Length: 92
Image (cartoon, rainbow, N blue to C red; front, side):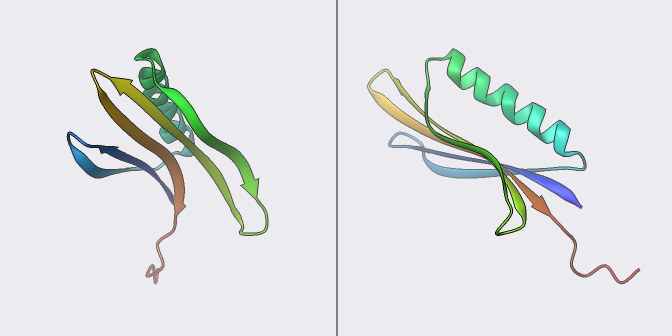
């Protein structure tokens, strides 16, 4: 099992980009995500949506924060999310 920390950004100046980082530890990924969210908030971003709950119906935990930052006439949007991953081809 591993955790994927996904960061999606969008702006008219730079376009859309997605960055994935893989962590062995949910805690390490969550700590890094919380740190980056706090950096954006420190620059004046606002939270437009967030979720932090176990989705029992789907069987996975949802942890996501979407932010919006207006700076120098530009609008930047960023979505941070953690996703659990599992290797399906492990025959060991």
